[in-house]
Length: 80
Image (cartoon, rainbow, N blue to C red):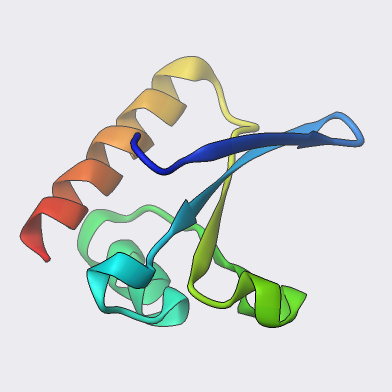
């Protein structure tokens, strides 16, 4: 996904997406994504000002589940 950055920390792996160009707050994006596509991601607003407008995607599921989630996220973004 364009604009995604991968991070690892303490054995965990996650991607950060910048939602600001979409015109939604990160919280609004997360709730709508969950409601419309059944995919749960975390708004980074709770991590301070530097997290505002960013969404954290955990990559701890199996590859097939992660691929399906990415496809659903992409489909959701296309509707915005």
